[in-house]
Length: 233
Image (cartoon, rainbow, N blue to C red; front, side, top):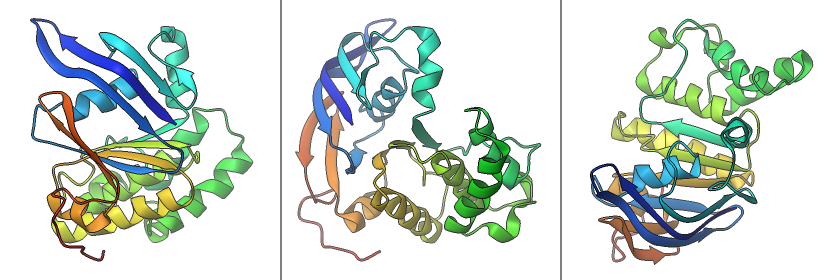
């Protein structure tokens, strides 16, 4: 579903964010990107969304080589990739239901689909009772649940998450990870960048560790540290 071949990213001024990365993420996998700040995690996520262009190498997302993709096709790529960020990115003047419905409307889905899909996905994230609330009326964890609902409502084959629990307390973070796990089990491929060692150790999924833009560890079914004890979410 996601493939990087000899990918590098160099910013203006010669700052190297990513160095010659090769990586394959298979359909249905859940992959954690870990590493210290500045290791290249967020840059890698942004390159997979074509928010940043790779300086070198090739990237395939959902079967399409996006490094050569023309700019007018990028919005169509992003319609097939769900995204969740640390800062939620909700529309403040729209209700919970309207925020989720917006993701369907921009893809041209008919009203009948919007009416059926929005309640279903709000039930999935546990927010059916707050469909008419505005983001300002929600807790941080609830806002992130709305963000997850919006990312998943189109049933994308891929979901990219950049520090989705970064602004949340540990208990709330566990709830968000349970939702991501549930989404992954429906068949959606998930790639998530995180600093949270506890979450990575608990989930026991594939871990790709970056340092100074290079992959230094790529291990299946492991925690942040390979010797970590299994914790049941």
